[in-house]
Structure formats: C-alpha cells, structure tokens
Image 1 (cartoon, helix red, strand yellow):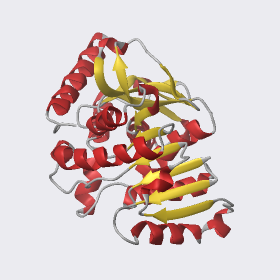
Image 2 (cartoon, rainbow, N blue to C red):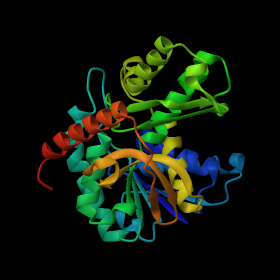
Image 3 (cartoon, rainbow, N blue to C red):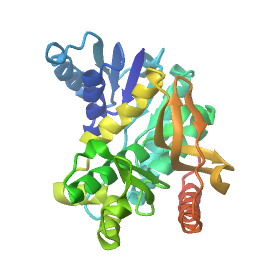
Length: 308
C-alpha cells in the first residue's frame, strides 16, 4: 500500500509520523513545494524507523509525479489559522491551494482515495471533489474523528474516567456550528445524562465546538496538529486495511438526512473503496434543525468560493 501526504507542515508531518507508528503503508510519500522541506521531514521520520520497528520506506519530494500508484492521498496543504481568525477567513486562499493539489492528484493518482484536512474543511473537500471529478465515495473530509475525540476527552476529563470508555459522536460542519450529540454519548454504555448534570454537559458541548480555537489562542503562532494527524491516519488505516470502521467523516450528501449537494460530517463505514455506506440515524427535531443550519452555512461557503 502507498500513502501520500501533500503538505509537510505540522499536520502533514504529524500524519506521516502516525502512519509510521501505526505501520499503515509500506510506502509513505511526503510532498511540499518548499525546497528541501519534505525531504528533511521525511529523513527525520525515517531515522525513527528502528525505534518504531517500521520496515517500510518514507520519502520526501517536490516532484508530484511520485503521486503515481497512491492508494490514499491526504491533503493538508494550506494556510493555518492564527488567533482571531476563523476557518472561514481562510476560504479563498486555501481554495486555490487545494485546487492545485487536487489537479495534481487527478493527473497522477486518478484511482486514489482522497482525504482532505485543509480548512475550512467542508468547503475544501468540496473543492477537491469538484476539481478531481472523483466519485463521492473517494473524496472525504477529516473532521468528525477529530471533533469526536475532543468531545470524548472532555467528557472523560469531567468524569475522571478513562477516555477509552467514552463513546460520543459529532456531526455537521467542522466549525462553531458542529453538533456534539448529547443523546448518544455514553460511558461504557451508561448515558451521559445519567452521569453529569445538564449545565456541565452544555459546557462540554461548547468547549468541543471551540476546541480548535482554544488551542490556536494558547499557541499564538499555530494550530492543533497531533490529534488532527492521528485522526486522519485513523481514517486512512480503515481504508488501507479495509477495516470497515464506523467513523464520522465529511461526505457529499445526496438526500441523506434531507440534505443535498454539501459536504457534512456524518457516520460512515470506511473500507477499501472509501465510503462504503452512509449511516442515517434518526435525529430529533432539534437535531435536524441544527443539521439543516450546518447545511445552510456550508452552502454559503460554497457560494463564496472563487471559480473552480
């Protein structure tokens, strides 16, 4: 299996790091347009192979023809957020970057499955989908895995329990309108509402929505990269190993949940063919309204995109 990662910044390097740790591919390629950057990051990572027991190969390059033969291509390229900047502020500048990446994937890796990480996520995965012309099953956005991980951690922190025992789902956009579902959150099967009062639950929900911004404000000169990288590899691993994991991912909806022509986070089965099934769960009226609000926000972003 061959995994390619476009963008050798913090998130792209994190993806490559976790790909080595999890041993998800025999060949890992790291791409960047900055001379020497991908090569230097790849060499540093390659030198960790004896310590991790990784027997595959990792390469860094500026030559995008090496995308050939990729099973999965991850797009992390783009400008990061800075304090006070929303994901939406990044829209136009990152649209051009993602468009360029998608054109290269279309040329050199036309059979690959694409995972988009660049922000604003739900608009950038739309750009990749339109430019590549790939079927919707093969163009996916990483968001729900990350947001759900943050949600699960905050629940575990509040209860003083192991995060491993927390199950929780976040749907909708990757932004302030995301929907951390309280109704389905549980700890070893025990509903969250039986463990915490409503006011504390709502504090966790709000912290989850602004989890990325909290890190941006603390770092001052960057954004989260460790968990975004691992969340992306969680998806890539399910595809490359045909694990058929149920994960929350940003996918193009065509009538599912009563929404069409936008990418939103919903639970899907990820396997060797990419999105093998979109799982439709019954939403309450309140949850439906929040989901439709996400759809409207995403359509506004799409309409604001420069011509593709």
